[in-house]
Amino acid sequence: MNWRSWLRPPDHSPVPPDPHDVRIADLLQADPSRAHVALIGIPFDTTVIGRRGAREAPGAIRRALYRMTAFDLESGVDLAGNLRLVDLGDIAVVHTDVHETHRRVATVVTEAIRQGLRPLILGGDHGLSYATIRGVVEGLGGPPIGVVQFDAHHDLRELLEGEITSGTPFRRLLEEGILQGRHLVQIGLIGGRNSRAYYEVARQHGVQMIPASRVHGTDPEAIARTALEAVTAGTAGFWISFDMDVFDPAHAPGVSAPSPGGLTAFQGLAMVHRLSAHPACLGMELMETAPPLDPDGRTVALAAALAYRFLVGQGELRQQS
Ligand SMILES: [Mn+2]
Image (cartoon, rainbow, N blue to C red; front, side):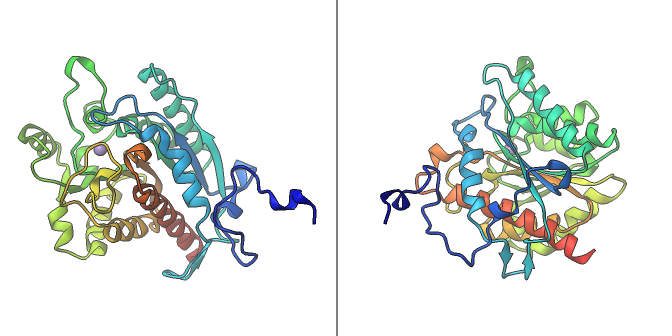
């Protein structure tokens, strides 16, 4: 036997190949015009308020996602031959220039939406959502859209001295009229981590707030249905903005600001699945996974599982139609 046959490419999966497996990586298309969903990485964490590391997430989440199987035994959905995926790669960010990075992000997202793609964005810190959501709205030509925000925090902070942070994106979107408060649902908010002043801002704008404790006391499917009512009424569709700090640190320790009492992996996965299978779903972003703060890789694995649930939801939608 030739010694070269014992060598694998440097980026190969540590899991030995099985000829029966069809994996997410096998769904990738070279031509974006043939795809339904577009993966887009944003390796940028310059505006994070607390601990950094989210810039390393896109590559880590991709590697974990690509290994997952195209067949989902839970829903019976087989993405093979059903969902076409393109990986557009990472946006060329400028770590020292927030405005230029946001401009590039908004432009890329606008174009992806114009091409009829459903973006699956791998962030990056949550400050980027100002640019991604602006890009979605511009790509559609400016109609109102809804946003389901999974987050331990409102992210409605005032821009003190104009500083853009991971705590300000939704404040700017509301104040600039890009998003209406009544079309924003915040799921998984945690007590003791949000000021009264920002709670009042959310109330004044008519933002629907669903604290983590309410999710724990209810069926996640029912929470998803409640959110869908708010984000689909009078909108051209809705966007899922997922901050990984919405999870309890037992499930996702690798985030900038871990918040005990947060959601479980199951709750997050169930809600993302239900939302992604809705025809009005425009796409999703997974923000604030920080691999350097995730020593055993469980936060990256959960982010990949959420990305997977989004793909399955999108596949389910196509199976029905
Ligand atoms: Mn956030």
